[in-house]
Image (cartoon, rainbow, N blue to C red):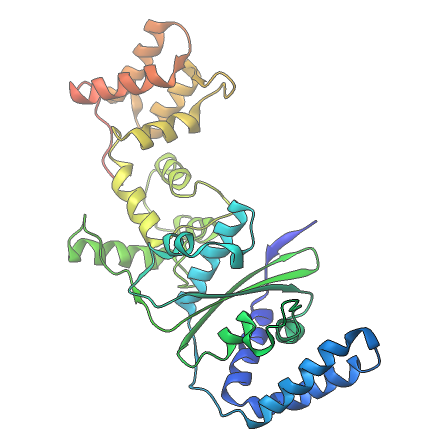
Length: 343
């Protein structure tokens, strides 16, 4: 079963429907009259028919709600929520509030309650109808949680994300009254943060707040880019832990800051994992150590990093992670190993 991004035009259809039903509910009456007509021939849908009839009556007297804004940044956050839900193997609307707040914490602060609308359908044009007609075994009627979200006067921003799995579209809408973007980091000055943000934007070609492996490749392969390809390769592997996921500004900054800090436990472990030959026994051979040296320096044998070779020869066997980590830490502490600074 194939999986990929949901076409933007499908998301646009859903967002337009939500805006239409809020800004001019009377325009939706005809649409739901058609739905009502199609349902009347099925006796098993008597409860649904009654609901749609009352829903149409409500739409006819409902006043327009305040204008709501489609927010690309909130769309990026919605994508992060969708990715997180897939890792947890639950649907986005089932993520507990405290977990949802942790997911969005790196990107936004001082936000109101985040509302989640999630469902699946083969067509974006029918998505809103499905939300309205969603099974309501408890008889909530107009107190249905999804309808409460759609007709909440306090909402001002909408963001969307989605994925196609086979022929089915998975639609996620995030709605919120207010929020503030994360614009600072406690470990950087304002000037440093601004510079990292400027560089990140150079890579983030579509300016959606997420840097993808494809965008990264497109920039570093441009004519005139001067950087050691092995260094670029190592940096890219550290930045994109999973090739199918992008990186946020925070991910980018964290990778830049840690790239030249080789004594960090996390960085040493990830470097070791990139080059280890025997995954089952979690060991690194002489060949793997040579590859590290060659990637760290353009001229490795003129660098003291080639002490890694001597380490391997002295052991005359594979190195475990603990041995590799302790050797690196001791060498850096004694200044017998000099690793390159950030490129």
